[in-house]
Image (cartoon, rainbow, N blue to C red; front, top):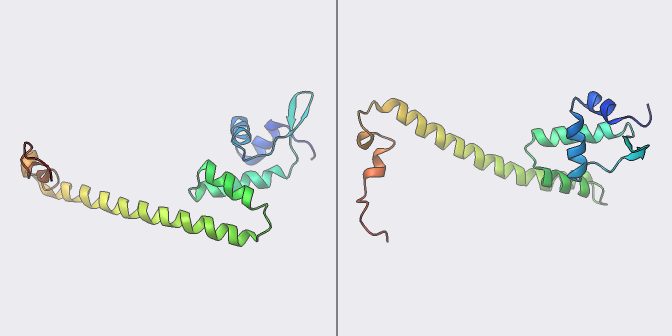
Length: 137
């Protein structure tokens, strides 16, 4: 099936046509051929759209995906490119997980508190520990 329309590509990829136009404007997709002013895509574009979906699941931003896919065309093996990007993203995910654990602990502490007022609260009480008129060092 050569020269697919934007609607055909969108349907096969499980996306809205607007997503294809967005990915094109963001530089993730190459500019398609135009026939009578209408976009025509090579069926191979589906592979790139699937790769974009996988990168989105891994948490990559549009800019990160643009860099990843640009560098995949370089001479170095993709495994080396992926290693660099994945290690950086993994560090970000680990920090996000740590923050989520801290948030969870804070919420659970508040649920166990049973306080009658904000000043006595195990979570918010520390906001009242310092004199608000005291100068900070």
